[in-house]
Length: 276
View 1 (cartoon, rainbow, N blue to C red):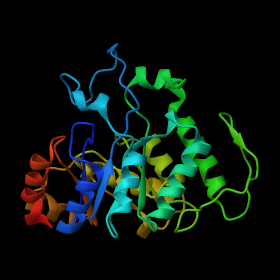
View 2 (cartoon, rainbow, N blue to C red; view 1 turned 180 degrees about the horizontal axis):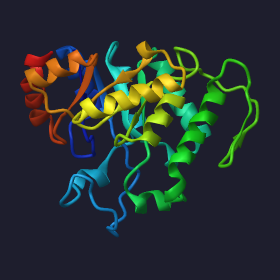
View 3 (tube, rainbow, N blue to C red; view 1 turned 90 degrees about the vertical axis):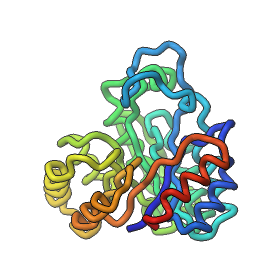
């Protein structure tokens, strides 16, 4: 079982360079970083976990800049976004950012994709909330057109791109590994099967009911069952849970580190050491 990590890196926490070096030295599989461009002080959208929204949400570092620093000081550490809010990006710019990070890191990028939960944040980016899933779907298709080996045009309801020279390309060809986050359901699973490599569910509870549904959607899309990747995110590990995940064919999880100073974060890493 590969143990990767996620953390809310901010201007007040351990730095990307320091955490990346420590993670690789300890044998962790990867570093996934979340994204919020800003948090409007007008609070309308409830915090999904309940209660007050933690202050680190409004102080997050840009994940691609931070992961670029992490890539520069490591050799094998996986680098991921958990998750990129694709609807809030220009897809041509995002395609360039993702491909560049993947190229410079030697193919270590996992592009985690999410639809978002903060309506106010999305609205400031001009996102129509009710259509954001279709917007993300189209933006992924447009990015894939730019990542294609031959110049490929794309025309959609939400945007287009001419057939273009666009380099660098993702190392593995076609796209970096892409995992979609979100709650289980037919629409999510259909989109995963259409354009992604798998699912990044928070916590990993309820797999007994949800995984057969995902695999059914995957099969219906004509995808190879062996290619489906599931990476439970922000997991609190214990031996029984890891054994259950292994029985389900899951070989990577992401554990949550505290959004804190260097001493606190390194102590938390050491507490996860028995699972490495």
